[in-house]
Length: 156
Image 1: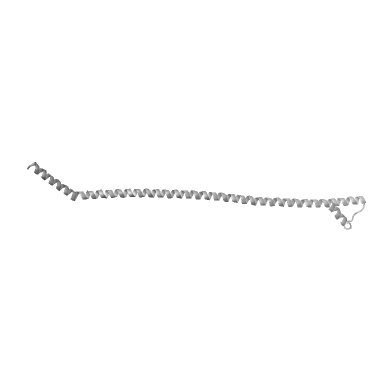
Image 2 (image 1 turned 30 degrees about the horizontal axis):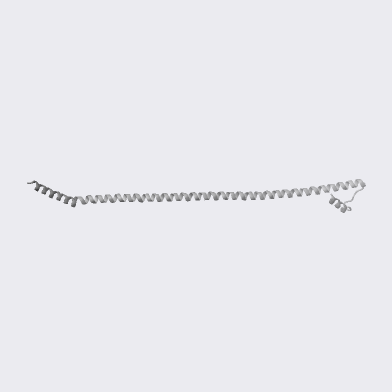
């Protein structure tokens, strides 16, 4: 055999090997590579989706935290306003009660003062009558001289 024939036979065997490989070996390898590429693409897509969901969840959590903080701040402010309102109402009631007590005390003191003056007038009138009796050396009749005694009380 000559080198040309050997080369020709080797080319045909190589061509048959290439055809065999393309027909029987290459499709399962290409299929496995395609499946692997699809799995990788699906994994990457799932990772991107999970990353997007995580970002969305973090954003919702942050919004909830902000809303919760605002709500808590609002409730605290309302509670403080209500406490101040209650304190002011209590102060108002206490002031009214204190004014009432002071007014009652003033009225009571005025009444006691009037009673004391009246009692003092009675005593002074009695002393005046006794003094007049002793000056005149006779008894003054209260029934007869009631008008005179009443004028004397008024003057005192």
